[in-house]
Image (cartoon, rainbow, N blue to C red; front, side):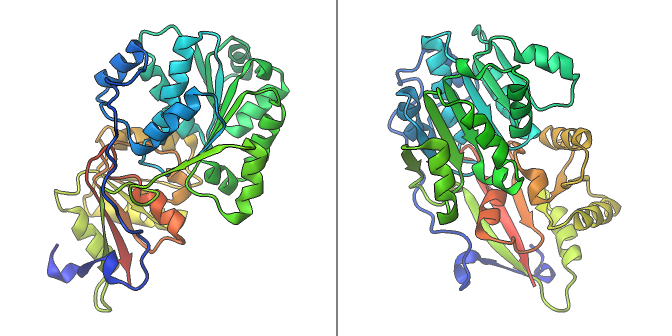
Amino acid sequence: MNKRAGATVHLSDLKWTIAPKVLKPYRARTSFIESALHWKLKRNLINLGYTMPTEIQEKALPHVLAGNNLVGLAAAGTGKTLAYLIPLIQRMLLDNTYTCLVIVPNPELAQQVYQQFRVLTEKMEFFSACFVGGINADEEIKRAGLRHNFVVGTPERVTALIKLKAIEVTRIQSVVIDELEAMQELDTINDVLSVTNRMKQRQQTILFTAGIKKSQQALVQELVGDAMQISLTSGSLSNTYVKQSLIKVAEHQHKFDILAELLQDRALKKVIVFAETRKEVYQLHKKLNKRGINVDGIHGSTSPLYKTKAIALFRNGKTHVLVATDNASRGMDVDNITHVINYQLPPNANSYMHRIGKTGRANKKGKAYTFIN
């Protein structure tokens, strides 16, 4: 980086460290091809480029297959979605009457989980559905009444369909609650409880969250009951492939100029810049665009249609930089993000880990920069 752009230091050089100690990357004991998974599932995993399970995937597999209640402590970028999809699909292959429900915090993540299920079950005769609203209500109710092996949706929409008796909960054997912390932030946890309270006969509950605070323990007990708990040992809640650095802005320097110069570097191929407010997203979007940078922006008030289009363009490489708030990025699953930039210090460590989990995925290296004054 150009010297006038400020000094870059490692987080370990500071007294306040928001990055936990990094341990050696996890080495799975068995590859997917060597595992006891059904050959159809192994075929699709290999075709999609998945050869070795991540730590959370290897640890979750036997418990989900055995029908145990499970709490998985894992953040974005650790492979947690496949940690439950792979064993759930295995159970469907062994019993074509098996049915499961996945509840996720927002429509974007629901669509991504649904698409992952579809590609993992290619050439398998399973019925699946995704319910997030936004389509003709009668059509959605009709679709919900079909016999599905796999259903994914947001808490609000799933609750509404169950109340309308469009989804027959007595047929569902397993329920997955993914990103519990995001549902609490979005104030949809009561809808989740409404769903689980109507599924007293369910055989299995699987819950994934970035971490459990003392204040959340009673909620987790209510949702999952007695459950096995698995967590990561290979570093932090995020992965170990992200190099994390600070950009210290001197008094005589302008932070935006440093950011704009940094984004001109060709090494920053696909970048997400985190801002704190929608006003800041708008301002950064506008100013970076004037500097000739291919940029888009999303925040909590962005329309679902615009947000979906913006994320698709970013995912496909049509947009170089995406400016976003924490809430807007929840559930955004985009591969090959090379850099994450925090334009301000994140409000807390959980927010920081969520953000940097967008890069360094699938054993690829990533970089995270955080501006400080």
